[in-house]
Length: 335
Image (cartoon, rainbow, N blue to C red; front, side):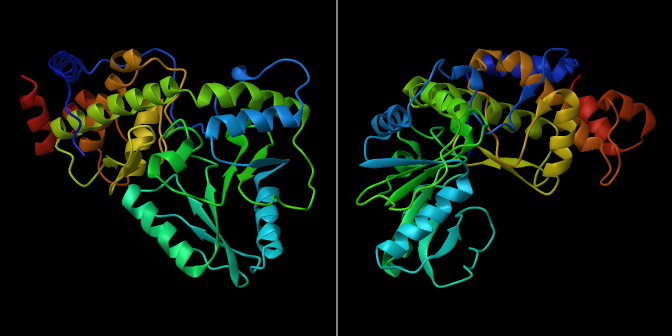
C-alpha cells in the first residue's frame, strides 16, 4: 500500500532526508500493547459496572465474564463449548501470520481466531466461513487488537459475527485481566476474578479506547509511520529489505532485514516490533519531529550496513570508511 503525503508533508520529508540530524527527544515506543494505565478510574469498581461498560462499547454481547488471566478465559470458552455439546479442544487460527494453524491436543470444539495479523477483511471472512463449516464455537481473540481497529473492535472492522470475544491485559493497563463477552448462555463455571485495581483500570480505559477519536488518532499515527517508511526506504533504495503492510491503526513490518531495521530504529529512539502498536497518547502532529527523522536515519544506515555487522552511528560516518558504491549514490542523491 502506498500512502501519499501532502505537498507540505513531502517538503518536510525532503528536508529531514537532507538534514539527517539525530533526534534528542523522548523515545517513541510503538511496541506496548496495553493502553495507558493513567486512564483508570479511582475508587472501588464493581465487576458488573465494568461488564456493562464493555457491553455498551461493543454493542452486541448479551453477557460479559471476567477472569484473572487470559488463559482462564480460554479455558472457560473450552468448557462452554463442552456445555453446548461440542468438543473441548481449542484450535488457534491467525490469518496473515504466515504460520499454520496450530493443531489442538484433542478434537476441536473452539476456534480461537486472532485478529492482530489479519491482512484484510476477506481473509477474516474466509476464516469465519471455515469455522462455521466445521461447526466450531467461534471466539474472536482481541487480546492484541482490542479497540485499535474500530470502536467496536475487530468484529466491526472485519464485519464478523463471533459467538464470543476475548479481551486481555491491555484493557487493564497491562495488569492481570481478561474478559470474555458473548451471546447465548454464559459459562456455568466460576473462575478467579481480576483484582480491584485491574477492574478500575478497565473501567476507565474501555470507554476512552472505544471512542472514534481514538481510532482516528491511531490511524493518523499509522499513516505518518507509513508515509515515512515509504519515502525514506525509497530514497535509500531499499527493496525487499524492509516494508510494511496491514491496517494503518496497527501496521505490520516485514522484509528480509526487518530485524536489523528495527534494531537501528531502536538505537535512534524509535521502538518498533513486527506488529506496530502506535501510542494513543502521542499526537499525530508530532510525527515530523519524533518519528520521521528516526526513520530516515534507520533507513540510510540499513542501506550501508553489511549484513550481519553492526551499523555505524550515522550513514555519513560509513561513507568515510567505506568504498561501497551505494554510499556514494546516497551522497550524490542529496546534493
